[in-house]
Image (tube, rainbow, N blue to C red; front, top):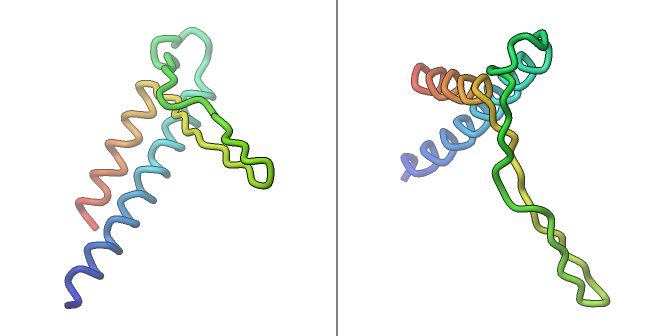
Length: 85
């Protein structure tokens, strides 16, 4: 019975490491000089925010991710760190 709890805990660690790796890759791309534009190439993937208005309650849904080469490398580094932990 303890095995499923450990697997769900590992999923949170994986998400945290992927988030940190993507954030680190994006930060490195931000501080690069303009001459290295190929590494700064960013593509936006996701859903634009949409609002559902029920007059007494509003829901806003949306998720966008800006992905570049260094962001993908950060995700990969986060995954590799997860495999070692």
